[in-house]
Image 1: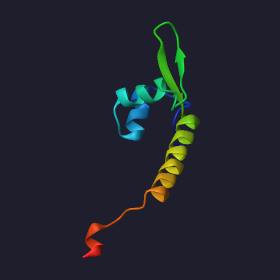
Image 2: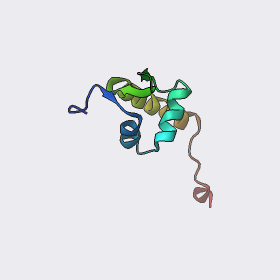
Image 3: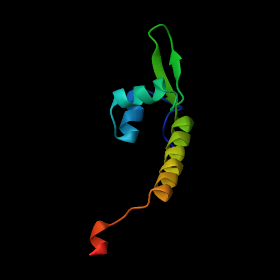
Length: 78
């Protein structure tokens, strides 16, 4: 993300995460993804560095989940 501006719109974040703007808005509103609200129209912006931190956190949480919930292949028992 070297050419990325410092702040991204929710639509930009949705594109990076390959999800919807509504899902990104929900992440922001729940406080999972730090963002700032600008101006009288209340446009949301996410700092690119915060997005990278969020992604790294999600990788860590996923690794923890996988470690705690090992995949069991039911076909292997046959």
